[in-house]
Image 1 (cartoon, one colour):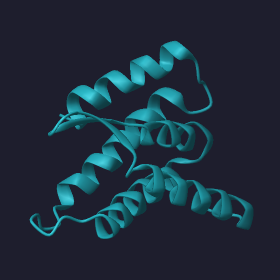
Image 2: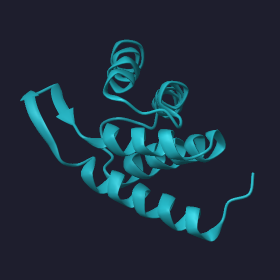
Image 3: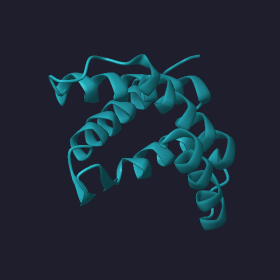
Image 4: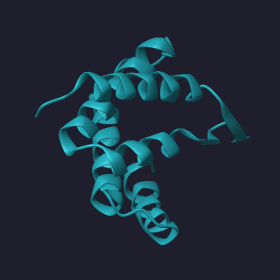
Length: 116
């Protein structure tokens, strides 16, 4: 895997934006809220290679945890694995072929099998 300086800068900026908007959400109930980070994750999955996507998902989860951690919960690596599986599903459905139908088809298994 050869990662050019341009791709590294773009991934870093998208990672920073993703971490920043992960703290912005619409609360529905105390335990349920709507986030918009999936938009950036879908963009990464559709435009970058698989190793770059997996590295992005891992770093995004770890940085988000350590910046916004709750002192009541210890680190759980299963959530990092969930982020990796989620971007893997997006990659399979969206890489180089993005349409509204594909976005809906990709988002459905991520919501049902990964996020719940």
